[in-house]
Amino acid sequence: MSVPMSALPSVSPTYPVPRVWVGCVACYAAGRLVGEWNDASRAEEVSCDDLHRANGLTVIGGSHEETWVYDHENLPVDGECSPRQASLLGRRIEEADTWLREAFIAWIANGDAVEDADHLPDLESFTEAYAGQWPSFRDFAEQRVDDLGILDEIPELVQRYFDYDAWASDLAYEYDHADAHDGGIFVFRNL
Image 1 (cartoon, helix red, strand yellow):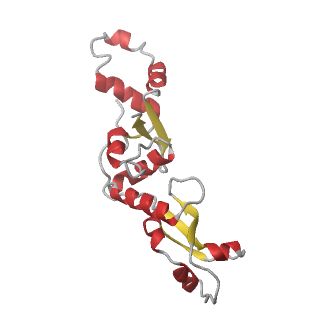
Image 2 (tube, helix red, strand yellow):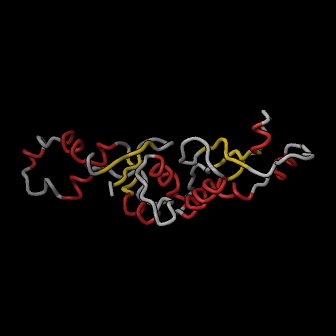
């Protein structure tokens, strides 16, 4: 019988913190990289003045008023994005329980996220969809057989012939999965 790798919160949870590189748009257009890394949740709070000060620059004249997120890590978006989008998504990730944040990020990045009225990934839908972290999808499928009692009424001699690979293949239509950075996979119900 298989047991999920993270059925309960760990004692010292770790998760990848979403971070973004916010840069000055005017400087970027002029061929200069003026910016800094910040937590995604505070990306829209960063001003061009902050960026120039952090880089030891003084701007005289010109329009250095707009910032943009040119790079990111652990933020489930494709390519560049606005500081507002990064902040909203970063704050939504921070709303998840600490021990669930990596799985929440994986759920969003995997394209499974259900959006709420604000067009942000819905935490309640994630909680409903999340089926745990497992060593493999096959391990998850074997546990589902046990949980559902599929083989309970079948003689043990016949149980040996149950095709777990076929069962896992069929189950893959109802569930999706994403790799976890520390091994195994996160499993999500398709909503």
